Length: 598
Image 1: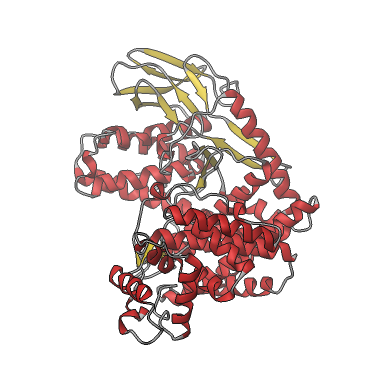
Image 2: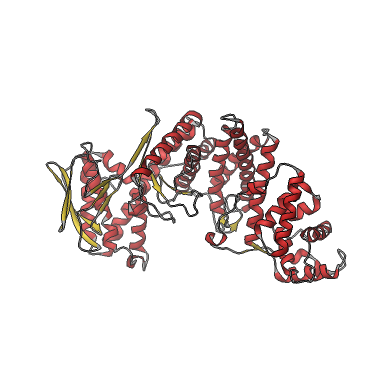
């Protein structure tokens, strides 16, 4: 098959490149980021090559239309390489090519009921049309229509109308520009730059957001329509004209924050991010953001509450995108990386590979908040210090778990070692006492809730402990009491089953008396029913009021105390959680808690 669209390149990522990415300094990592961008473009070309070969072997009826689209891309590339490069490098192209290749090569996938295979494969035609329009190249090509419309990546949606859910239409160049037609209508459009961005009855242009100074501009589409960007697991929302104004203002203000105070992060974001995908909020008032490894350059998010939150999302999700691109070039984990473990930024257990992704993203967040500690009002500086103290510690903990996992490759160990070196230096930096205390309480609250939700002590061991408690056996005198039999088993629950985590700030009080009063309230709640939030609040309160032994048990083995308490709830005198924790502390002194999962 003719054309250079299938031309592949070789990209090599060395350990020095990995260390420069972790350092995140403007200039030193420039070449590495450009290498990753080029590698992702090559990945898309490889996917297209595999797709074309698989389609030819399968002898599908759809192949002639796929071939015609490919040939148009090759013709356009012969006269305008940039036009083809831009559409093939787009995040939705990667998502589309990987999905279609899977449908062609894996049994059963081709028969997916929601979208016919010919419609999915036909998406290459709309990609080729976009390239041809941008290059001013003549064309006439059949394109698939979904409910009478066609979405052109990064360009807009044409609605010539249709009589069926899935049917063929046509796009072709014309003296006035180009047009999209079906047996039911025709939409005429001028060439790019000649008011083609104006909406009409049959055309909705893709909104764009372009902000920043020359040389460091952020240019992204706000894409709520492209079917190939519906790959983030959360419902998308259609952006109204009023909401578009808010999106543009928030992005512009966020970009000013990044350019002014986080120049290196701004530069990487400008080179990586090409599309924003607006999402619905799963919980009102709780924003969400996500990236997908197969859609490099796209960030899906609900509109953050303010520009600073938007800037934070850019930093966080760009880190994810960069590490996903690294992992496409060189494996960071080996066999066993699917083992589930605790991630201090998630409510659900995560595989080791996902923990590495999260650690890299939150390492970037720690750097972001470290830089913000001297900015803004006093309350804003304290808030930044809380975030810095929190994420430097939790990321360091995650890195320790990654290092001990035994599943990191040499490249993965290089990244982890570079992050650990920087985090060790950051741990020596002083933050206000109030900030470190708040950070500790927030982190502890998350970890306790997670343990109570996901770690289930062996029921037989809990019953043995409850029986010993009722008999008031002294430590060491009753073999059945030994907690070495307790093994914490992770039970995976859907995130939706856990529900939103309440703000742990609700557990924070200004003085010892306030924590003591709060503890009394939590004890009353636990006397009535099992309450994860009450256990969490009690554990945090006891860190400030003591006794130290009770505080240690509630912090490190909350699932054991809660399991015993629930087992004994039917007794005439409900057990006191503090008394249970004190008794378990006496067992810990005799070494019986050593085998409990941490």
